[in-house]
Picture (cartoon, rainbow, N blue to C red):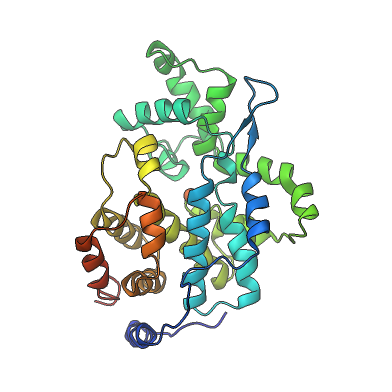
Length: 314
Ligand SMILES: [Fe+2]
């Protein structure tokens, strides 16, 4: 890919320059036809195993759409080629496919139970806390350790509950299953699939799976993590359902991205591009949509006052 620049200083200059010349009518557009995006979103629907003939509507659809639009804008800013961007945005639209069938109530009960007890909820966190767990067997390890406690706390751990565990701790396995299941639909829709598209979806939970990939794949994976977390931190519905959050704040969202940068999950380059676009107002309407309410004037001032590179170019 064409790198934007090679030094932090160049990156600062580059983004400042681009701040002044933004002219696009929609700064974070869908790069594929709306009809295709709608068809892809239907792939998140999942047959309800408890009631035959009923579909569980994909919980993550609006999050996926907003994330994909942000990702397209950031990737474009970073200089990725337009033809690659189309495939990338399709991957971003499907990045949470491994959670198709998410049972909001059950998933929320299991994971808020875990969170209250400090039980790791992501594969990489699980492996850090339990290095003895064989790689890829995090769901099994979680169930072996906590199934009885969950049941005694009133959460019936049947097959469907185990699927909800798999949606987090066995995400790679479940995503691979879902991608296999929707392959004929993708073919029908004329969507060509490349292995890198599946890999970028795994970076947040399994950063180690991307060691050795070309730099452009890694960067696109980082962009997806940055944008999906930025969206999630501003997503009121998710905040209520997943995280028992009562309020979304931009400060918290940026603090989390900064934490990911410090941990080495995100590079300065990616953070910087997201900051610049947010400062320009490219994400205002998507953020308002995620919140379900207009941004306040204080929030808009906060965004406009973001100094691109305040975090990454210091
Ligand atoms: Fe996501």
